[in-house]
Amino acid sequence: MLLQVKEVTHAYRENRTFWSSSRQAPVLSNVSLTLEEGQCLGLLGTSGAGKSTLGKVILGMEKPQTGQVLFQEHDFYKVHGSAKRALRRDLQAVFQDSYSAVNPRLTAEQIIGEPLENYERLSQREQKAKVGELLETVGLKAEDMTKYPNQFSGGQLQRIAIARAIALRPKLIVLDESVSSLDMVNQTYILDLLNKLKKDFGLSYLFITHDIKAAYTLCDKLAVMERGEIVDSFQDKDHIFNSTHSAVKKLLSAMLPEHPRYRTRMRRDESQS
Amino acid sequence: MIAKLRAILRDRKAIAVCSVILLLFAMVALFAPWISPHDPVKVNLAIKLQPPSGDYWLGTDHLGRDNFSRLLHGARISLGLAFLIFIASLGIGLVVGVISGYRGGWLDAWLMRFCEAVMTVPNLVLVLGMVGIFGPGLGQVVLALMLVQWVYYARMFRGMVISLKERQFIAAARISGSSEWKVIRRHVLPNVLPPILVMGTLEMGWAIMDISALSFLGLGIQPPTPEWGAMIHEGKAFIRSHPELMLYPGLMILLVVISFNLLGEALSERFGVKRRM
Image (tube, rainbow over all chains, first blue to last red; front, side, top):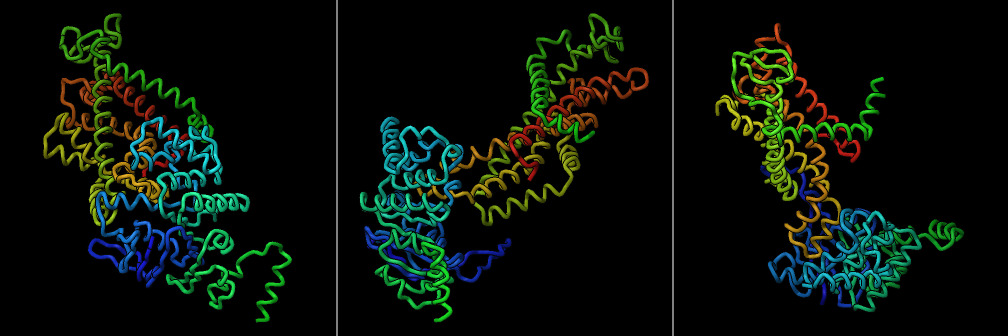
């Protein structure tokens, strides 16, 4: 089992004073899920459902109040030192806002080179070659490595973020709304790229999104969250269309049809049912 | 009219002119012992209060010391001390602010409450109090100014680090396996230092004012050391007969402080840096 989330409950701290801090209503309550190697799980839900918090918990950035996250059978919050470093290596992430995900003062080479520096002792020339290779893998040119983030478009920056995430050949990549801020054309490109990388490198994804279409394209199984809970999950992604849960229906109705004409028909169906 | 003037001052000409003036002062400060025509502390009562001449360009003061040489050496002390205070308080503020903002939690809360406590007391009062305890003198003044200045830097650094922490490249760097120290060195400091240096230019002007003010009150640099504020202090006895004794050092302070302020203002306008917190 690659990833196991067991009964995770979490609330953020607030009202911090000198002496005490209270916690808000839970953002996650009793969340459990599993992910096998090579699989892609789509985590769906509207804004504020706790998807991103769950992503943070899985990435080891937000210690949950109760519950356990096992990545490759190890608890991220219990291992330390070199064991944690080794675990870290297999778990990478791509975020939503590609502009904020890269340091504006570094070149593409430095950005993609950072994980390599941390884990692989390569000579300068080797690292440069590796970065060039990675850039080409994600559909950019090797010459682009000397450019700064402001010389790239949002879609290109997202490719750079993906190149950084796959640089260490991780086992799992958490994609937190990674295509949501892109236009349709770029979304399609990135989704195709992610699909290809998954096949080529045997990657697993945890794809956090509110866009059923994108999740359906990329994922093998789906889970739907609402108010911090997983309300429905589907081992076979096609079953989502048969779900009767209100949260799932809400997401389905938010999906835009291929052509505006169908939209009215969908509305009419809804009002009848 | 005023708006127009401001627009002109904001122009890049302001940056150029102020930089040239400050550079000139810096050179003077560096090379004062070699370029000043006379010894700035050599007393010769036979030639006291002389008008400007070929030998004494700006005349002599009440003890027959060369005004011009004293002004040059004054630049050395004023600028040197201001720079020392700037660097030292920036250093302390950097360490405290970055740790506070980056770590957060109770440490942040305590450090910031301490800074706020220091900030509630007017700077000059605090410095006067410290000088009262340690006694007047150059070292004490520098120490006192340093100890009240750093809290402002700490607040600024902390604010910037906190807003920077929200940016996802910090999280991305951690996920790439970078150590906390590497994240700070590579992602936090380079994004935080340049705007602070711009604001530091404004602070330099204030430091010079503070040093001069304390010396004028007789609490800072002690005679016979030539320092602009101390020179005004010594000259004030002759304000009726020889006002130039106060005027020369006063003009120097004016010129340097205005240059620092305009430069700081122009730079922060240029780089979109907000003043203070």
